[in-house]
Length: 192
Image (cartoon, rainbow, N blue to C red):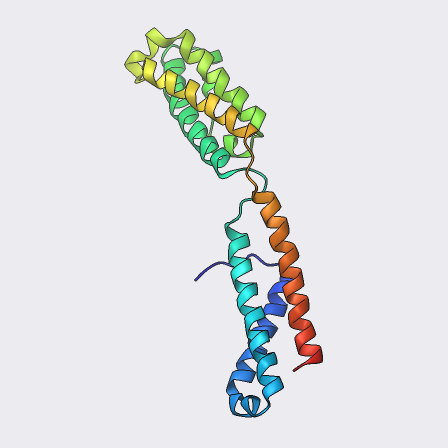
């Protein structure tokens, strides 16, 4: 089933609308005898359908960050953690506390960081692996891994510049939902 992204008040109103629709359907023989009521019931059902489709659409719209940015951040975090893990083992084997401190990155830590902090942490890993590139080969870090991290950093920085229209779309959908709920209430108050 599709997910709805509505406020508590909107969820309650939608539930009420659906319950009323069920009652109207059960009494369809009475409703069809009154032409004006039949039209109003059809309009009401259309409002419910529109609310459902807008709620589903709003749930798929991302707020603030573009989808590209989100994907690039995940890619950057995964690559950073992968290289940091090998770098940590390298620091441990060589009793290098500074390298271990730089490379000690639990994945949950990156999730909580701001964009600039993630970029800074990835750059510190990149600088450290670049400085120790020859010594890191036995630990599974190659020049292509270093290049991949560099590319991930560059891609993520450039994705911060590109914004999607998702925030604008979300605002429009929110306004449309408010209008649809008001229309539904007006139909109930004045026509049904």
